[in-house]
Length: 224
Length: 212
Image (cartoon, rainbow over all chains, first blue to last red; front, side, top):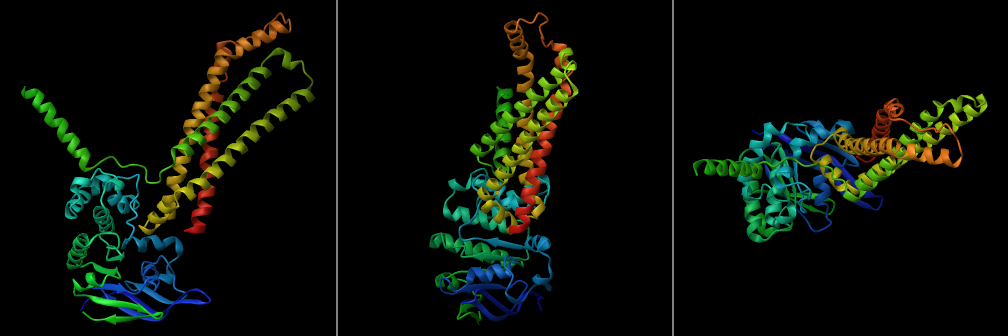
């Protein structure tokens, strides 16, 4: 029986007095699970991911990661939790003035790790995502699929327990979408918990996984 | 031919390794225009402080200066100190303004770094380092330019001034008297580095802790 990695307890979130986003959400996500998050545009998929990644504190209720309540972590210590969570953005967010290698190594660099200790890992990871030919290239010279694979490699490099992906296939074609989904599936097989937000039902149909549907300020779980 | 082939092979191997693991660049980039502007302005101010301080030290060493009344000496001393203090305040203000601009320009990068698990101190150190580097290079450049000016231009100016005023004992600054003022060329860059580091640190710390 896998341990619970992420728990939401009576989570309530609002942006303004007139705009509730989530109303009393309860959810348990176990280690090694694969979840899709789906919902219409503006339903709150990104907000939900932000709550899970500790980038946003809920208006009320608790979000627990590995049993630790985000509300109990001081703001200046939150970075330690963020290091255990990988995040993949729809718009990649690769730094244009750094090469692919430097972008992928960035999470390790911000942890002040020595380059000699991670150089080999970064090169191996770039091989795994088929970007060995782009190591020295800047993001502007990469295709959309290559940029997203680099962003995935960046999210994986620090071996996080949880990977959150916000519409990772939103800016790539169908073929690249499948490749990216395969990468997430491979990571999941290695034990990483994956939560992937998408509105692409076609993508969801390619993978047997739980689906969290966000609707009417609440969530509905659809089983595998 | 074998040796040439070996050299070519080694060179290609080095190039391949460089391709595989390039030298890491600066995480928080600064716009070239922004850095150059700061560098030029701080260099000019550093140059101004150096020449002012050196000329003051040279002047108080002259016998004519000792004949002035105490009130005159104190007044000139205060005005000189005030002028230099104002220049230091201007440098601090420029750095504070530059730090604000840098944070606005790099806000997406900073957001990303925070999301990737960077501590506030990591971000603060990166920004402060870039401004300290500008202070260091600009301080040294201005100070060096001041030294060159004093060595090559000031004696001629004083000679001309002496001739125009029909003064028989010309106040010509000799190279040895300039060497005596060497500490100014070290102290001024150090002060500028300190001002750049402290003012950027206080600004960036306040902003980063407020917004992140």
